[in-house]
Length: 222
Length: 245
Image (cartoon, rainbow over all chains, first blue to last red; front, side):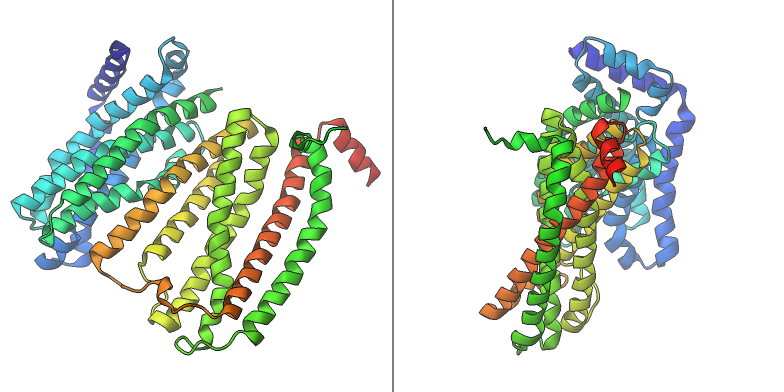
C-alpha cells in the first residue's frame, strides 16, 4: 500500500518536472498577487507590515486554487485516472497521494518564496519564521481540502471558477489561524495558540479529506 | 394494515402527501406571520435603549435561525441519500437550498439595517455576521455546483458530499471567526448584549419563527413537487396525472 502511495506521488512529481512552465506560472502568480498590494495601498512601511500576513495568506489560497483545477483534469482526459481507480489499490490512497504531491509541487515552493515577500513588506526575521511555519502547517490543508473541490468539479464547464466558489469558504479557518499566528507575533503575543489550532485543523482535514475526495472521484467518474 | 413512513419515501406517494400539506402550511405561515407582525408592531413596547429600530429583529432572528436550521436539514437529507441512495432525499435537499440561501441573505440584509442605527455602521466584522456571510457563500457554492452538473445523479451526489463537508466545517468556521474577532479586538459589540427581553417581544419573535418554519415547509413542498414531476416524467403515474389535468 505504501508502495502505491509512493508511486502516485513520484508519478505526479515526474509529470510536474517535465512541465516546468505550468509549475512556474503558479509560483509567479503568487509573487505577483502579493506585489500588487503595496501598489494599491501605498508604500507606508507600518501599514505594509500590518497587512503582510493576510496578503501573503490570501495570495497562497488563490495560488493553490489556480493549480488545483488541474489536479485531476489531465489524468481524467487521457483516461489514466479511470485506470487508477479500477486498480485494486484503495482510491483513498490515490486521493491522498495526489493531494500530497500537489502540496510538494505547489505548496512547498510557497514556503521558500514567502520569506522574500516578507522582506518586501518589512517583516522582522522572527515574524518571517512564524509566517513560514504557519504556511508549512497550513498549505497541506489547502491541498487536501482543495482536492475535494477538484474531484467534485472534475470535467465541468467553468470548473476553475466553480472550484473557487466551493472551496474558498471552506478555507476560512486555515486563513484565520494561519494569518492570525503571524498577526499575534506582530502584536507581541505568542503564535502558539493559532499554530496549534491550525495544526488541529490540518489533522482533521488529513483524516477526512482523502475519503471525501475518493468518494467524489467515484461520483464524477461513473 | 400497517402504516409505514417508508411508504412516503417513494416520490409517487410523497407527491400526493406534499400536495395535501401545501395549503395547510401556506395558510399557517400567512396567519402566523400576520399575528407575529401585529405583535411586533402594535403590542411590543418600544425598547428604551434601541428605540423603534429594534423591531427589525422580528424578521432578522427568525431568518438567521432558519438559514442555519435549513442547512442542518439539508445535511441530514444528504447523509440519508448517500447512505441509502433514496431518490427523494436528494430532491428534498435541492428543494430546500434556495429557501436557505434566501433566509441567509435576508438575515444579512436585515442585520445591516439593524446595524446602521445601532452601531452606526451597515457592516461590522462581528463573529456572527462573518459566519452568516460564510454560510451564505456555502449555499451559493452548493447551488452553483448543482447548476454546473447536467447529469442528475452525479449532481445529486456531488452536492450531497459538498453539503456534508460544509456541515463538518461550519462549527470550525464559527469558532475560528469568533476567536479571530476577539484577537483583533475590532467591534466589541454583540447581539447578546441586550438586556433580557420582554416576554411579549420574545413571543412575537417565536411566532415569527414558527411562521418562517411553515413558510419554508410550504415552499419546499411546492418545489419538491416540481422536481418530482420533472424527474418522473417518463413514468406512468405522471402521464396519467397530466392527462387528468
